[in-house]
Image (cartoon, rainbow, N blue to C red; front, side):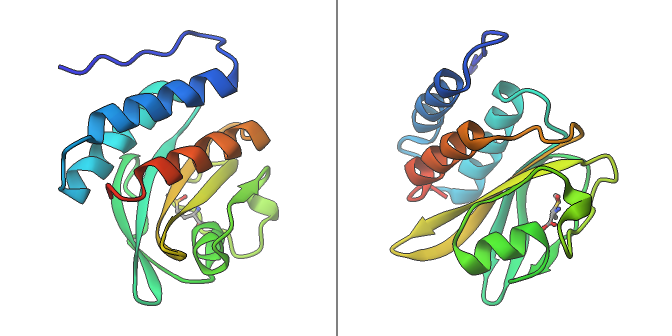
Length: 160
Ligand code: SME
C-alpha cells in the first residue's frame, strides 16, 4: 500500500516538493514506463487539488498519443502544434492557460475544463512526453504550479 496525503491549504512550493519526493519514491527501481506514468498520474490526482484531468501524452513521431491519466476519457492523438498540449510539445515550453476558451486551437476533451497547465518532459533536449493538468476552475494554475510540475517533469524524465 502507498499512502500519500497532502495537508489542506499547504503552500504550493511545499506541496510540489512533497509531490516530487513521493514521485521519486514511487518510481524508483521500476523500469516500466507505463506503470510509472500510471502511478504518477494517480499521485498527481491524489495530491494536487482542484483538477478534473491529470496525465500524460507521449511523443510519437509528429504527434502526441494519450498515455496514463486520471479523469474523463480524452482525445487519443494530438498533432504537434495543435491545442495546448501540441503547442507545449512543439515548442518544448510549458503552457500556462488561465482561460482555455481564449487559447486558439484549444482541444476540449472535457467540456468542464476552464484552465490548463501543460509541461514538457525532456530527455537529452528532446520532448518525449507532456504532463497535462486541467481544472474546472478558471485561472487555477499560476507560476508556482508551473515551477512545481516542471520540477516533477525533470525528476521523472528517465522513468517514463
Ligand atoms: N486540452 C488539451 C487536450 C487534452 S485534454 O485536456 C486531456 C489541448 O488543448 O491540447
